[in-house]
Image 1 (tube, rainbow over the protein chains, first blue to last red):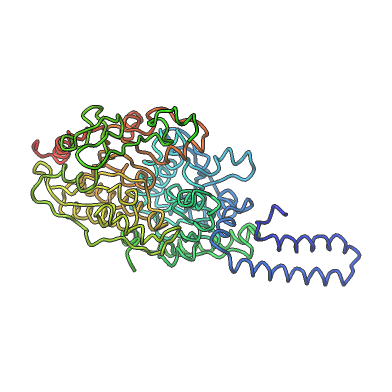
Image 2 (image 1 turned 60 degrees about the vertical axis):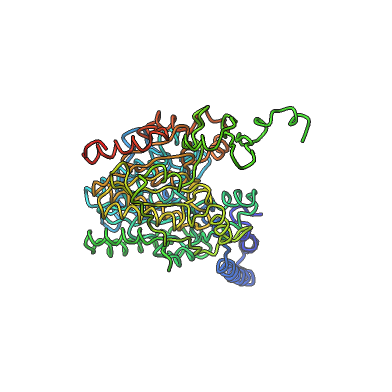
Length: 317
Length: 287
């Protein structure tokens, strides 16, 4: 079993393993071997296309949580020039689960707020596995209000297993910090674009997820409770998480149908982690186009549209 | 049952700490906290607060509004807003069937009831969560009813008082439920911009998505004594941090101590205190 591949990707892993082996053997320019490699490569692409064209919601959740999936820290240098990270909520501390700062996207100044899970074990602990505490959401709020003052568009990158459920979180008012962001984002006088890049889990995701244009990467996921949490409540076991994922409709396809998100951004074959640069380039292109569109609109009509859309959530079709 | 379980008193035995209070329905009711056997008509006179230990027992939404608003001039709002099953959600049961069951057992159509009326003569809008309806959870209909009530408050420029009692966002409506958090928060923000008071009263229990939206956004946040409120439930927190939680964690007294709420209001003083607060906020003579 190759750990760089998910369970359902193991047939691809086997093929890729064969290709690697042949490459090692084929140093003497043997034509037959390179033909064989070429043939296996095509087969691998076809296999990947086949598997990825028919992912179950639970499989999408796994891709969204893939250990090699690009995180906020991977996107920032690929999307923005002239980057300055800004720290702290000015009240309590600096939450490492949220990276925020100002940079330029194709020359235009933007405020960026993203949740960061951390890659290595050490980094994950440093980032609290991407689970923000109140000070994280309050840092985000402070910088969004600053963006409003300086008329900078706000771009958020959502990727969290949820707001941190701990004693200190509760003591410092995690609920209030999330609620406050929802309230303020509904009327912030600057365009806001939110993108779910990996896992959008519940209130911890929504707390930086209210805006004018909502994107999801193709294999990202967005839910009100994790499939495991849902399965635990209903079936009393996390083993039924795949069923819960199915029932809740956690993929961009369904959420676009429900009118909750605006756009699905296509990922490279086999998921964003297969080609981080291509993914970032694609995302950059879309964000740039969306910014052109939103900044060309009158801010009052943009806010009216944002509000109407919020009011319409769930209205029977 | 093992011999060990047998010798443990039944009140200690139940795993979740809630005591077995199965007294035959009728004239008597056992206090869910101190086990005192109470005469129902007397208990009602005390607004379902135990006269022995002052425990505030859970009450339904309709009764909540009934003991809060003035008797005359009530009008129920948004009754045409009904549950919608957009996802055709099904687990071991169909969501549709769960709704039907909840409607039958509570006699309500959804987990939030909203009314226009007066409080000691002050015109207000008020709503209450029905915890017995699907755990008072917020899906489309709850969010929409809350929002419509707020819109009435906005149009008529009168205060809005909401009593929450809920487990959080409703799982069976998935992201639609999550978005009700954004929706209700947005309409409250609109009230703030317009200078219309919003008072949030937390009653046992208030958790999850409702806590992380409308319940904590009051101009004034208050709670009944001993009510539990928080973002994550105690079980989830214990699982995450692998520690026992301190005594009184997430109770209203804890919330007051940590600055989340302005005050704790006893049920018997609810009408007077809220009316007095609203009159001062809106610069009107004492009611």
